[in-house]
Amino acid sequence: MQQKPTRARILDAAHELMFTRGLARATTKEIAKAAGCSEAALYKHFASKEELFVSVLRERLPRLNPLLSELVEKPGERTVLENLTEIARLAGDFYAQSFPIAASLYAETKLKRRHEDSMREMGTGPHMPIEALDAYLRTEREAGRIAPDADTFAAASLLMGACAQRAFAYDATVGKEPPQPVEEFAAAIARTLLKGIS
Image 1: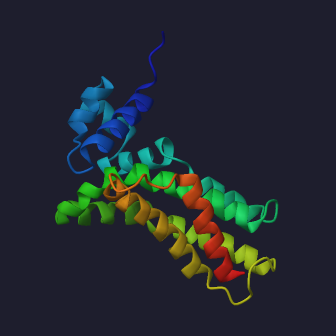
Image 2: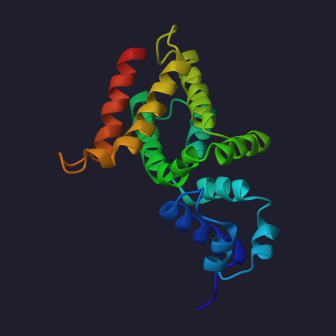
């Protein structure tokens, strides 16, 4: 059986360690060891731990941005409700998987600041999905499929914020009653949001 390429092994190991230990506690040395390579080999593929983190988000978690980009280019192929439901489902899954990775950053302010600086340098960050959803909603507003006075940025912020909050609070609801499946959550969020901007 052929071994995966080094870069893929590094991404797999980083995803696993970042998810189980958190971004702050998963070291590049541990990631390299788990990937079966040297730390120097890791740095041949990724310039920094932050770049590795962004690559994990882009390549190992649900792909939200490609869907949003596609919807901006080709609006109107499905209903706004169908699009918002799919966006909320993907965002719910994305935040559920990324929250355990990034949460540990908030315990170390210096690391969080360094991470935020690196994200800015790479031109990425948590604002990107909101801006992409805002762009999609503007195309729908221009097409007359939502209200002409709809605040698309506020709507995008509400949807993404609800998905992030679900990931944050998901474990807190365990034991009280089963958490709402992501499909039901996504449909409810999409319907409610659409009522406000229709």
